[in-house]
Length: 329
Image 1 (tube, rainbow, N blue to C red):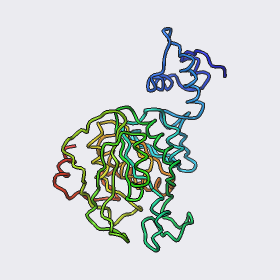
Image 2: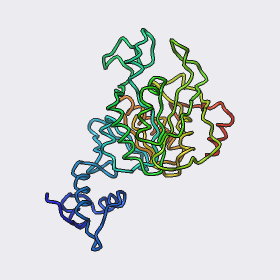
Image 3: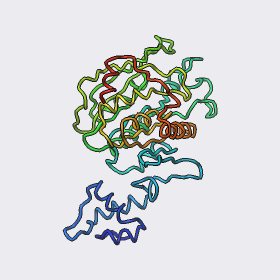
Image 4: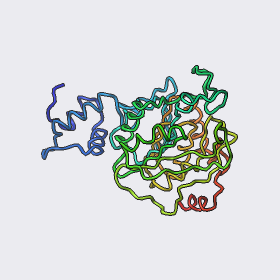
């Protein structure tokens, strides 16, 4: 279609999109309007590309296509929580520019499995068994090329003056975290002290790392939060590598406000979704694994109906200072 100046009504008719959705997209993207109310040629082109590529403002039409036939989309009754079963890079590519307020995520890195090859040890499944049916869940192949795309997409969808938290194991911290400095303004590395000792051939593991960075300038909501979080790991987990809800709550206490849109593109067991509900935030999540989608859907639905977390019934924070911080968040 030739590019020219269009009115909202003309675009609504041509694209078969309701005018309210068009207006919301124009507002979100700060697209330029002429004095007569028409969109400029450039703005019209952006609108065409956005809606013709099937991207959505609400996840229901003309956008991130929820496919109910293969059970790949779930939305809470109040519309504040949405999760998708989709590849992370595809999912991120469909989100509008600067549409989320906070990113908190724990990627399923492949590096520790594929590079270290520590015999019969176990971090994610068994190293000797590489077939898709043998692993606990699909890993994110964290090549530099993949990770650059992932970080660039995170930067694009994150609003200005907002924060991002990305979890790392010791191997990915060395191999991938430096790439984040080329995209975001890295502020600190938080240490998650799990208290319970884990597996390991060269010193047994008791901690993981959380990279804390920003897009633009934004202070933490609380200045009393330490850079070591003593929160027990989930020992009787019902989903592999399940993370404590309080781990994500600490991120929200530091960086979120009520009704912020929180994004986790590696949903896993849904702990970040539960933390977002508890902290009165909206939430978008995705994961390529059907098991993640099914587990998270059941967990979220049950929490809304009972206010009980079926995957983590007890608080795992042992540090009195952190308990006070989370209680005041």
